[in-house]
Image (cartoon, rainbow, N blue to C red; front, side, top):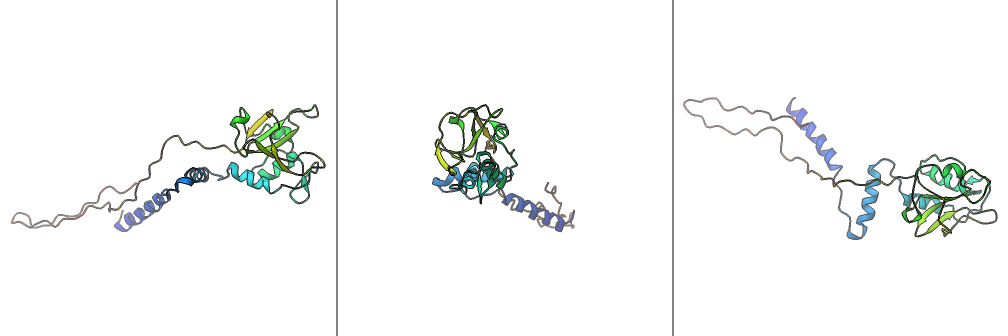
Length: 211
């Protein structure tokens, strides 16, 4: 490997390492900043807050049975499907199937914004017949029934189903960030004094190339 190739490789490594270096957020935004960076690093970059923000776009829209349109109206499962579709998730169309998607959450106390909460309150379906999006603090966004608009209300009772569509990644160990290398991997040549027994200067020997 030539010196030019080694130098080019060093530049690539420095660029890659620089991507891991982030500016420490201010004290008041440390938690939110960490959540955002972690979500971005794990693929989709979608968070529960994104789900809530998307669902709020439907507030005031009329309930329309079978509806899935942000312009004309939605029903409860149409709201859920449309919100998640806008964020890149393909959920089933009806509430009973949506309440089987994702992973289960044990109780409302463990629910997070963006989770789906559903109830089985009639014999019409084999499973959930009403579903909503939990937004935190004991509240939810729902498309309730004919004659009412999409709204934010208190969660009326412990849901029969709570499902998490967006998994929250957990940091298992701190990640250390290494500073980019500042020294060349090539050993420095030192001018050797010439003596009567040695008239040839020492040659530079390359160190092991970076991996």
